[in-house]
Image (cartoon, rainbow, N blue to C red; front, side, top):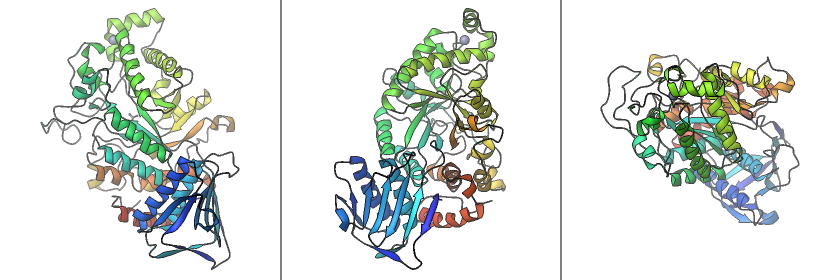
Length: 503
Ligand code: ACM
Ligand code: ZN
């Protein structure tokens, strides 16, 4: 829902005809790309043809331009008047957000021409960080689907793709200096059926992303003004790597790429200097492939039982004068913070990283409710909000048994996602500034196929997108569901699977 829509005089419309020109400033590749993408969208959504033309001047029916004055780089203005349709952005990114709005306004049924009522739309997002997470470790999803995922994000104005690319059940990022990591670490010998039933399929399951593929995805996302934040989860959720390098675990293994779900007690050994060497090599290549300023180091669900019993870990604690195992995790995080900061990167971690104390520049991803986020903001650390009760879209969305069968967690219906207020009431105005924005998370223990992932996303992605974008005073669930019906037509047209009922 755009921030401000000022209708023109009743009944006055601009008629956009097939083969209309889309003008953009010459010598601006991002604006050319915006024009091409607009053409692509209108064609796929509505079979409507428009033609990008550099510097087409006043004759063009649609004009993309820069120069809108705003403090918000994503601000844009759409004007429809007798002169045609103009999208003016504060930056190229703002223009791209405006392109999505125009596309949604035109919809699916344009025909030979489409009548657009005169209007001025002034818009900008509420939050600068508008995240969507995807777990491609528990199940592997092909590159084409990752691109579709990015398309869905672009349609909804999201701008940060949090890519969970390694975990206990499979290491899916190619590291060229350690090729076996992906080759062997991505393959589990079998997968448990259902929710840790003890029954298995006894069929190897694997798949990983080459660095070339990752770069291709980064470029695809960048055209859509979406940043990709890769996550190598550590020190827990590491059985994929431990299978290949058992010497990095406290017990020395052997370890299997995990065939079940849950929290493994086997984690990286914090007392072995080889662990940090390993991580630095991984992050070197990760930074090489992903230009994102933000890098996620995970940090969730990392039990400390092995560390309690490991002579190396205990010696390290003594050496550093630490009294609690949680501080060992902070020690690793601080080392990585230093290492990545020197490369111009900022680390993000799940809220467990608060336990042993935060390293200096860390951003906290609050998932176990909002408590961690509140605590971090009070410590003047930046925060991303993804509390399970509102943002875990692997949880089921309808109260029925068939839904529960394929979901681990609780019940997160559309209305619940929509009702999220990302800034906790407990925070002062000053502290609230540390809340960067909200994010939804899609874990895939029970989601093995693209259509199913899309079904979990849609329409809850619509709900979070308004939480991310629209000022809270403007939010209204009933009005939202009316807009949603239009979105469903688009999903039908594009072959996107979605949950057609909502609660
Ligand atoms: C998480 O859901 N384990 C961050
Ligand atoms: Zn150890």
